[in-house]
Image (cartoon, helix red, strand yellow):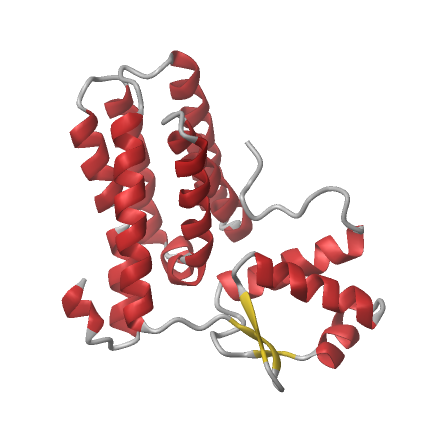
Amino acid sequence: MTLALAVPPDDATGESDMVLALQDDIIFGRLAPGSRLVEDTLLARFGGSRHFVRQALDRLERLGLAVRERNKGFTVRSLTPEQVVQIYQVRELVQRQAALLIPLPAPAALVADLTAINAELAACMAARDLRGVHDANDRFHLRLYAACGNAYLLETIRHYMRLSLPMRAKTLADADSLRVSHGQHGLMIELLQGRDNWLLAQLCVDHLQPSKRDYLARNDAPAARIA
């Protein structure tokens, strides 16, 4: 399955490289929320034409990682604690529902695919390959939720995964958090071979909580009490 954030292959190679590089900068915290994405700075870094840079910025906006503001240009998307709580409320609802719709016991092909992706994730963790960790993690979840059989529900999950990328970045880069996440993936695979959709659904919801709590705590957010 193609990664949700992958740039379509018909883009120019240079633009694709620029989008991927800026994605990494945003996802892994090298560009903080609210940082300006200045065209001249990006031209100096990546080369190409101004049109080339603007196309890449437009792509980041469509991915939900940047916003265009009047008289200010593009900035890295910044979310309030209240927005973070609301985004995760939607993620919990849709991912729980998708898990409840997965036919159990799951087909052997699904179990094999997820096992292979989780092994790839472990290899990226061992190599400290953050981009590989991010890609494998997203592919695991999208492959899992695709099994619900509802394309509209899957697209909603994909959209809210993108919106929550800045909140997930720190836990994806933290070795202890990753070990817990990887272990929960293994439990999901085990539950797929049983018959308890409710237990699987609750695990999918619990799996979301560390990144939300960590982000709210780091931002000293009163909304953490709501969460």
